[in-house]
Length: 463
Image (cartoon, rainbow, N blue to C red; front, side, top):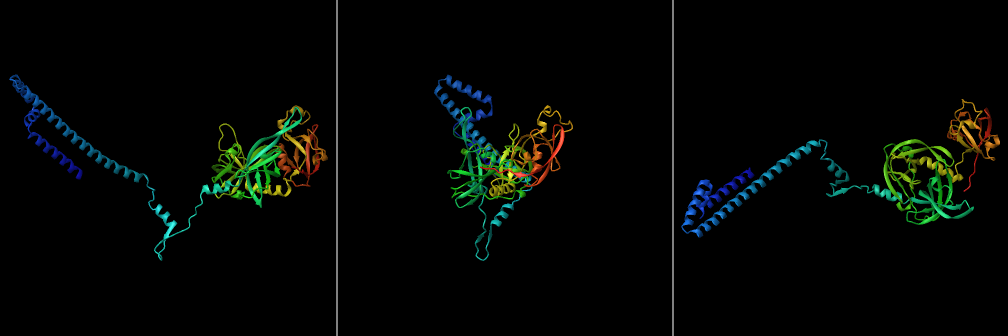
């Protein structure tokens, strides 16, 4: 109603201004102009007759005054129109704002205005005895703080090898064969122990470790296991090194938030952090190792794992290591398929390596290949019904297999009463036995099925 009243006042003002103009010294010309074009023409004719009688100067003065009056009227109308437009825009904006406000409240029916107040009341409560607010202790830990602390235990590992000249049969200088990551899991005084992947340090003549502060030192290899892809190192100059605690991988579930920390693509990107979730647990992935094919139990994650991340830590949101990042599926069109060795399995392997320097497993002493990978014409006497098995390709003369009588080209079809499908299957069944066990091995030789008794021994490795 105020705005309408203002609008009426503006109109009244305009009317009063017009009345003043009509009462001004040029009233006659304005009145003629507003009444009709005919009056203007008559006036013009009268003025023309005056001009003919010699009043040219007076006519010029009247024309100038008439133009000024017209300009004044136009400016007054423009001011009025501008005020009217401004008024209409103000009213429209108010109406539209009200509609939007009503619409927004309707669109968010679950919005809880009490939620922020409730959160504040949990952080602080009034103390009636003192009249001042009592602030409860609130944890200031954040994800960034946790990552900063965990990253101090992540190290870079460089595999240094000797360069050999096969043509001159000479050994050349050293070169960096590759690099990866490692995690400090134990510390005693200035001595620190590091877990990493076997493939990171395999065939290295020297292993160089780069600590979080940038210091470099040479590591000693305590032991390694190619099948599980775990290796343990020791460094002596680690006074300021931090330790990352193990978490319980058996409690990990699909959907848990995880972070991968490592050195992708080398030490220039050291302690890079990527984030994801646990995609699946208890996955079994077949991998090809220097000791043969093996099914590895892993945690699957979509946290980015790149070359150089191998041996780094997969941690939970509590800052505990729940796995050692080991591998990923790198194929065109495949993304987010990374794998880590579960921490509970890693701890078992670490303990045995630190106790024995290696993983002690039954050792048959033969190298194997899958029967279905070898052309059939190499076995002309083998019965056509035999389609599965493991073929002996080499024999260690000092091992249990050779002592029992196994030979090259024997096709092993069972061990300990378990049928063998391929070389990986043979290893699984073999490792279910213990050192000193006597097991029966059945095989085909020259088209005939034979069997021998083998007393299982272990293979001692030296580093």
